[in-house]
Length: 216
Image (tube, rainbow, N blue to C red; front, side):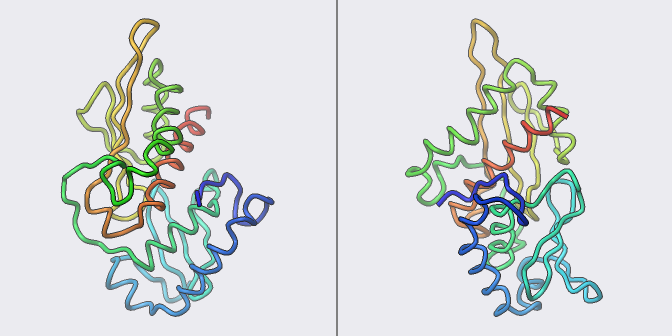
């Protein structure tokens, strides 16, 4: 089941289709101690507000405990149902192990070869289609999401979408004669933090946000 959804948590018939997965994750959160989550992930817990503070995309997500209700600090970024589910999965399964500085493609993740065609279609090809001839627009959109730029391709950058979970984009310019190219890569440590399906969502979601913010 794809977790992609452009609907916010509070409305939309499409969002209702993900409610069972959200409910399941929230119930698991109630059975997991605050100490286990903070010790394992390094995420801070605000005792006064009774919520975890999860950083990502140049902002903070606030996860109420024990209910699992989620809000965020940037009004331009509604928390989609898919993102809420992945944030909860990170709190339930993730860790704060350091990055390995070893980038891998989606195909190289456990089971990634099965879903790679869909990942390319939803996360990679839209970058080529929207930006290969307008890299400046992609650069500005990436800046808004807290990108760290790197010397790869014609434009390369990493965006930390969740704590210790950066996504790295490498893009090559194209024109009328030469097609552009792109890749979305992950630090190999991501396999200890999230399931492959959640990782696919993050790639699709971040690409969607880059396109959205490029139009602002």
